[in-house]
Image 1 (cartoon, rainbow, N blue to C red):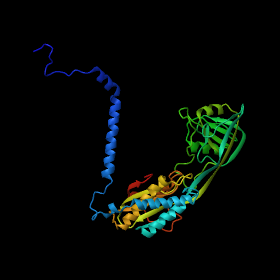
Image 2 (image 1 turned 90 degrees about the horizontal axis):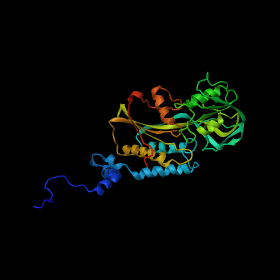
Image 3 (image 1 turned 30 degrees about the vertical axis):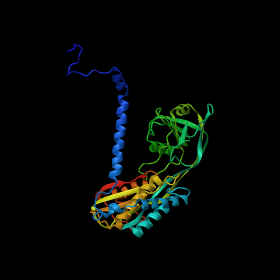
Length: 379
């Protein structure tokens, strides 16, 4: 036997070029394999998971839900939007959308359907705002890049050569004299609480300076999160500026601010469809918001969810489905204005409010809610 022969058992020699390639590419290969695995899993779920698996004769409702009918509802909502300036917001096509949903429930549903009315604040901007430093030197700032009028940030105003005050704290006893001033807030404060406090102290406008980590001004709402009818709203302008702009404003003595906006309190509604059968002590809420943003028809967000919820209810009615637990279907209003419709529904139960607009409203107790299912942007 040759002395150069290899043993039958032993370690395998490693090719240096293969080892180097694997060291440099192993993460990419593993990532690719992971993606392929996820795609395969998703395809399997799509092919097999969406198909009814029960016997059609014993579970007809699983086979009865029609995507064609869902699309028919979507087409109707799109028609409504086109008739209302391409929108189904609280002040445009939401009311007509609600009329359509109610008509379908009254004709084909099997529930006690009614409107649960409430008030929503609607904030509208009619022209872009302007912001300019006047003294000690003039600087004109760019809307949406350097500054932004915050949502619900007051009504129209025209402030010329307004005197500037800098607030480096969030409480009334530490901000100093702000009466008649444009107040630049540099501290990290609660938005509405601080802005409203400064308005009550006589400020003409409020400007919040963002921290350096943010490169864009904020468009957050300056409003109570749990707002309801009777709560205050801002009347003076409330702006947000980038950190760099804020550094200039803290050394400015006078500024110009012009805004074109309005806040209206309008009546709107939820639609509640309360099931007539099933155990009310284990009520299941099936909901979707019906309104859209002001600048679009909202067919995906959230015509898709509200149309699906509507067709589910109609399908259960058509198949004479008898649920073990009570089902309450809901189409929320003013979701795009801060979840106000669903919040009103919750407050009504939690605080035992009486809905002063509704002639009939079945009693739904807070302690009876077992589950909430929310459907949003299903398309």
